[in-house]
Length: 321
Image 1 (cartoon, rainbow, N blue to C red):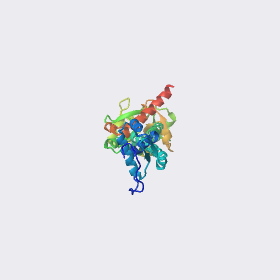
Image 2: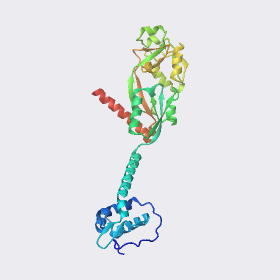
Image 3: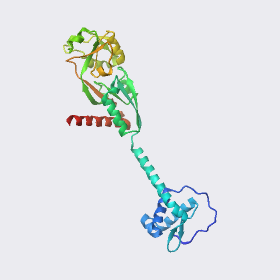
Image 4: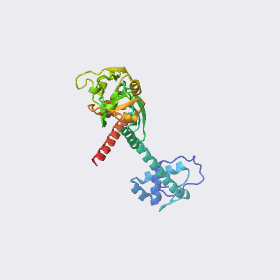
C-alpha cells in the first residue's frame, strides 16, 4: 500500500477498543472529507502528504473503523466516515465554544474582597452603585462586607483584615483614597435640648456641651470631626468614650453628650430622642473609598477602584449634562 492511500485494509482483523480521537485529527479528517484528495488536502493544511496520511490512519486506529476507501485515483468516505463528518463538526464546534468560555474566564478578574464600612456607609448610594458596577464588570469577584468600629477603621486596613473600606476622612497618609461624595455635617443633640428650637446653630452656641469621645488611636480624626480646637481656640470638652455609632447615639439620647455626624445620619439613624441640627460653621463632610497602596497589586482590589472611578465618571457626566 502506498502513502497517500492506495488499497483497502483487510477486513476482519482484530482491533483494539476505540479510543477518544484528538481534535487535531478530527480537523484533518474534515478537510480531507471536503477535498477527497490527499494532495489537495495536504496543500490546504500546509502538511506533507505522508504526515496527513499517517494522522488519518492513526485516527482510524483510535476509532477502530475504516473512514476512507483509498484507490490510486480518488479517496471516498466509507459509511463510517460519512457518519463521522457531522459528529466531528459538532465536537469541534463544542470544543471551540469551550475554549472561548475558558478564555473569557481566564481574562476575568477573580478574587474575594473584604470591604469594611464605618457606620451606615454600606447603605449609601455611592457604595451600592460601586459594588453593583464591580459585580457587573467582574462577576467572579466575591465581596464580603464588614462593619468597622470607630477605633479600628484604619488598623483593619493596615493589618490586612480588610482590603478596602468606605470611610469618612480625614485619613492618615498611609492610606490611598478616592473621594466619593461631599455633604454637610450636623450636630446630634438630645431632642429635648432647648437649642434644638434655635436651629440653625453655631459652634459657639454648643461650647458648653460635652461631646462624645472616641478611642485615642483615632484622636486626630475625631478632632477634625468635632472641630477641636474651635475657631476661637477653645478646646472641646469630651464626655463618655464610645466605639461605634449606636453607642454614640445612645449617649446622646441619655443626655450624656452631643456628637457630630454626616447629614445622611438623619436617614440612616432616625432615633427617638435624637435631633439632627444644622450648624452653620461646621465644615462639610466627605466620603471616601480607602485602601493600603501596596495592595493595588491585588487584581480584585484594582477592579474595585476601577469600578468606583467608573461610577464617579458617570455621575460627573450627568451633572454636566
